[in-house]
Image (cartoon, rainbow, N blue to C red; front, side):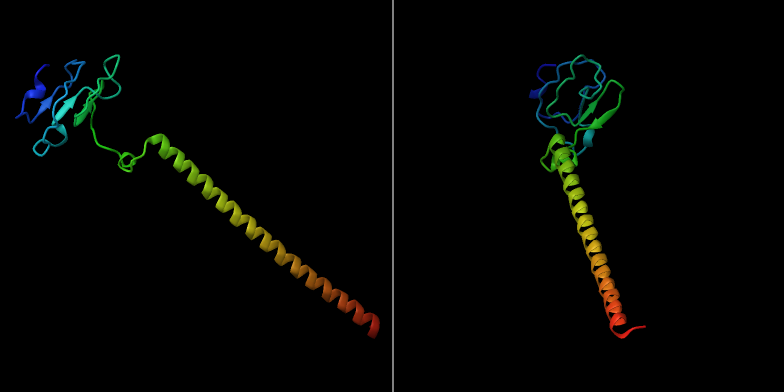
Length: 139
């Protein structure tokens, strides 16, 4: 529809389920009265069209299943990241966490082995002292 962008007092525009393939560019509408239902179009996925219509200022997108979803930024998008970057950061954190756990277990195992070797050498020294004492003093 031509001329929609020129309507200055437009408060509500719902274009879903009417097979409009080219969504007009309009100024952002005030969503104070109607909330996320201010500007609704068929820009959702899965689409009833070969190519999903693009919408700049839509507040809600509906799909071919007549399910409608508000166009809000996700937490990841609010952090200024894309999902690929977020996945890479999450994967890197997991690898670092695994390395830290591995290092901790390695150090714990070494400390345990060192404690056993100290105990074994102390026991060996006591046995040698006993043998020496018995050989000098006798039974």
